[in-house]
Image (cartoon, rainbow, N blue to C red; front, side, top):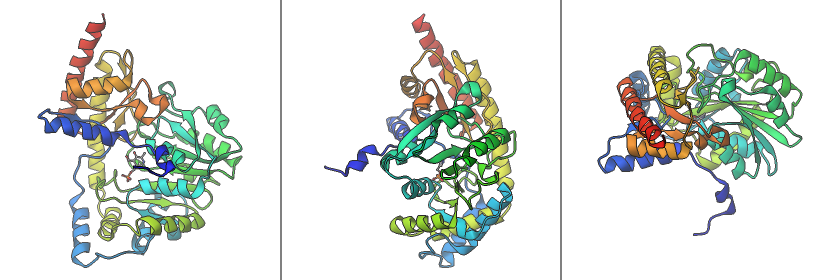
Length: 393
Ligand code: PLP
């Protein structure tokens, strides 16, 4: 079959292909511990489920306004204003089926052929995929373990050129668990103020998942708010364990919100109606389940990080946010190691290369699994790594 040329430039998310491989092994009777996929293993809180069901029973089974129901856009505007300390008008909010369409739409709307986009590396693979898809040029800025996976501001500045139209930031970060500190944010803002023509896509989907420090958003910096040229991407998938509902949003300058609304009318028409009412309840209702989930994630993080650091050839920093550990592994190319761990240990994880060139030498473990399974996975990995270390000596 012949496809349009642009399809050759579209990438993918390895987490889904590893999940499929792991499921195929399970179908053949193998028992696999899943540490590959980035979704909370908790159930959506029951009051949110009930709000979704109630909406269906009340007849909310039709199209909604393309950019989202007014009540939800207003609630999101208030939430983003409160958490980032900025003014937000509901007209700046576009509600989408998950956070992902915001990156898709932002890149489609703003990046022309030949435009450059600064992308952290390693980072979420869809950024690179989409920039390539529209004919833009990704320019990678490394995030290194030695620097706690934070930008080197000189490297960031050096990545900017006359052709740069957008920079992408992600904090807390997938896959590293690194976070933007207030100093980083001020430093980046200083650089970006010299380039008022550059858009900032700030992926804040893990904004509620921090363990040590409060959340910092570049959008809180003077001149870098979503009334100017920053697009905040956030959503409900991670915070409220709602990955399958598909509910996210972007907050951006009104003229861009109008363009994104046009892209949405050309693709999804709108976000699922009942899901939007469930999201309204998520924001308005009790937040204790979020706190409990974070408390549990924190103890899993401590368990997996200390366990990984005991394994031969493994060195793992303590991630400050999200729910991923991103250890450095010596002695193995990580692509083959991820396969080996799946096949010999029955542990599904991702090679750091799934997140870009600078991910080589690392594995990503999602600790969205029980403490019992994390302990079992660590034991099994210890067996395989010790065995391969012995084979080499
Ligand atoms: N941004 C990052 C950094 C992510 O890790 C993910 C999901 O894994 C998303 C965005 C997409 O979230 P959603 O499921 O709401 O589309």
